Length: 111
Image (cartoon, rainbow, N blue to C red; front, side, top):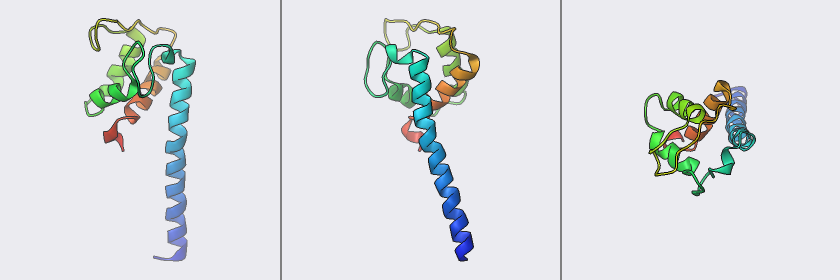
């Protein structure tokens, strides 16, 4: 492999890593600005389940992203205990999709 090829591969790898590093703070920032953190935390239970647990439960399921985006906007009950998740209609469909993607990225199988 030439020096140039090695440089290009290293640069592409660095860009990929920086994109992934950006996704985590962006997702967390969106969760904060969407009021998700009032009931959820990333790795510990508050009122609702931690995002890591949601990612672990749904990470390997087909259609999980769409399902979670729907739950964010429409709410749910009985999934994680007696306390229902209220609908979050103030979260746009696009932002609900971004939040679902971020939550699923926390799954150990997403690595």
